[in-house]
Amino acid sequence: MKICNALVYTEEGTFLQQDVWIQGDTIRAVTAVGGLAGTDDEVTVDGTGMYLIPGLTDIHFHGCVGYDFCDGTEEAIDAIARFEARNGVTTICPATMTYPEETLARIFKSARAHENKKGAALVGINMEGPFISMNKKGAQNPAYVQKPDIEMFQRLQQEAGGLVKLVDLAPETEGAMEFISAVHGGVVCSLAHTEADYDTSMRAFACGASHVTHLFNAMQPYTHRKPGLIGAAADTPGCKVELICDGVHIHPAVVRATIRMFGAERVIMISDSMMATGMEDGLYSLGGQAVEVRGNLATLADGTIAGSVTNLMKSVKIVVEEMGIPLETAVRMAAVNPAKEIGIYDRYGSISPGKAANLVLLDQNINVMTVILNGEEYRD
Image (cartoon, rainbow, N blue to C red; front, top):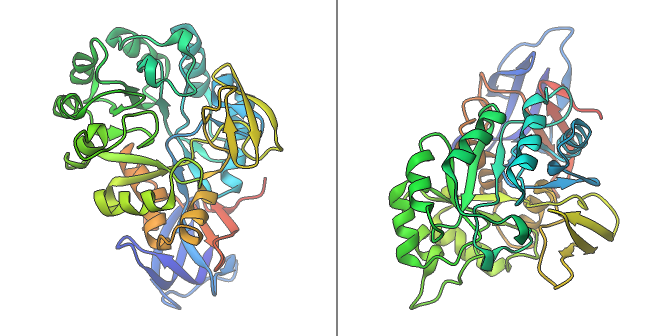
């Protein structure tokens, strides 16, 4: 396959009009327009006037189209993977909720057994609960909140076959620092659902934490005398932070300020989407709790925001069209940075020879026109 004349997103973070050559499921070459001679049996896709970007990677979301990753079934994973692929999200690292160990073990076994036959590739798991603060639980189920447990995590990672790429925890909880010190070499430790102050957060980063879950949400606010976790993350070089850019969770001015504060290379866009994504308004569930969805807002009975109903590609469109973020920056935050953070950038996250041919053609209005998955036009 050849995709010709498109504005191709480069590893330097710019767009250049180029041709992309695909052989099998792999990118073979990226050349100037007309740089290589084709063959008679080669499929040619005309990308004139369109952007060609790497498939996106969502490292924090819970579900869509009526399914939740925590359903723990092949049916759920398959439906989620197909929806994400249709929307240009070609690699996924879905998140769990706060559940007891036996429930998490069942979910992880199901993920391990999944074979990526159709739809987005399941490349990891984000273990969001249960090692969180009760006072900042958000939409997590308080019945199963517990202190960090190294042995429990190791058992679950074994059940997952090593798929857990991120584990979230509140650093002020008993045993948190010891947990981070013990496990951070094999998994990204993310600070989340926490009341931690600046000093506690800095100690956690010194122990090996390197990531913050949905920055600004479920944590103390950033103020001039109490900078908290947000200030500590900004002061820690290499710490990556997630942003939910659905137009509900974070004001556009704060999104712009965060990118200036951290630099685009440290910000990771996530959807945090739940099962109502891609569905009509109504009543749904998240972590065993009832969620009401109206428009693009999902809430618990007490009004707490319960995830989003916006997929990651839609979030890219929102930050470009409604928040004034350049498309180049949005692609970096939604495709490049997440792939790097969970250690899959050698195969995914850029349009480079030797990498997976997972690509998305967008029109000038940031609408998905064509998804190339594993070297073939995706048709569900």
